[in-house]
Length: 492
Image (tube, rainbow, N blue to C red; front, side, top):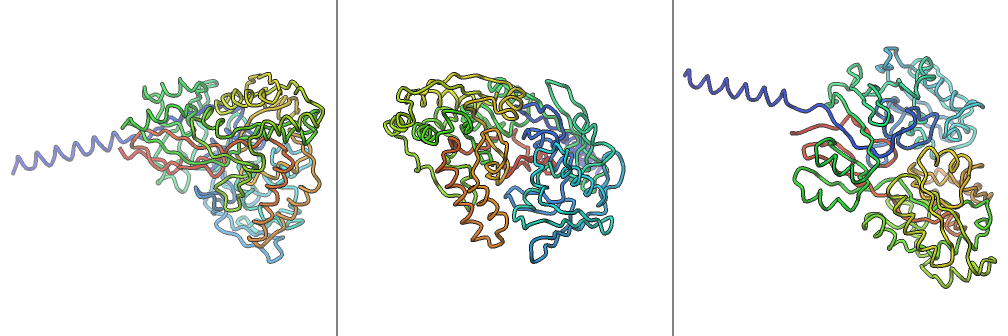
């Protein structure tokens, strides 16, 4: 009997040791170090990836399938005319500074974004809001000027997050939200650390006590860090050529999904010679997407012919609008007055997909006489001179927000496309209440920007994730820039 009790005691002790050793920390590899952590000040996708659904909460959020779900709002109603949205707000949220969140914080956050002096990168999504009313601490009513069929999708964006008035001045450095994770610390040039918010109502289901984002820009260093154990995951692996190696390694899982990122060869439409549609169409005829995806992405990625993701039910395949035809491309250049081609610069941000694609694109355009000077730039130089000041000829970047065809209505915007017809069409999309009609309008919008060859449409950026075996709860694909941490867990 005593021997039996000893065995039971030993097994119990071993079980206790196993439980004690259950991991509750995670180190995620991240290529781009964000300049700050306030998405209302900067459109950099890396900021939203870190803070959305983790530090800051929104009225509504997207799930992995891209469907709008409740978040701070438990539910909502929309009037038949599409002009009034009434949200019921949860009564159990506190900001990380301990103050209770209520409807007045939603009103403050939205009116701040709507203000004439607002610096919110997505200020335009608030422009159609006429009033924000708060009938009670748990009710918010938005009244619109005109119907907006994409309002709920837009409100999932971290730029529509709910913030405390008393902390907005310091959110860039130490963001304070109401989410399941709090800002812990930042080591500039190395990492950002988030810690579990034990005061969050869902804290008991959040398994990871601490999550670090470690910044590693070099693809080879990323591989080495995973293999050495310095990293547990790299959700957007910058070295696609190494995925086969990780697939053969039992210590890792490789997950290949998709993103909302349309990789484009952005063209300065307001600058000669690119303000001539014939030149832009010549560029389109010179692009060999298959060779580009093989050369730059080792076969990972889906060709696109317009600014719209292939996984969307309203996608129309326009990759055949400009088939690879070098003779046609040269003829268009000659017709536009450039029989011998011309010189142009291609400014490339530091992402491997951009740098590698740039080398291939430069070669392909060289075949029709466009002599490309490649200019690698760091992210701050891309955001400033290229994106904000339009100081470029050509550049390559992925646009990662859902339904961001509305970029083609923005004035000013970095690629300087100005089409009243497209702007009118987008207005019809926003006011369409019938899904079938809206779908047809989306298809017309895709065709319009393709016909105008606004940009060179290259491929849909894949999500190439490498995860240490035993980690579960990650999203295979990214329906937006958010990457929620609350469901991540170690199973062994």
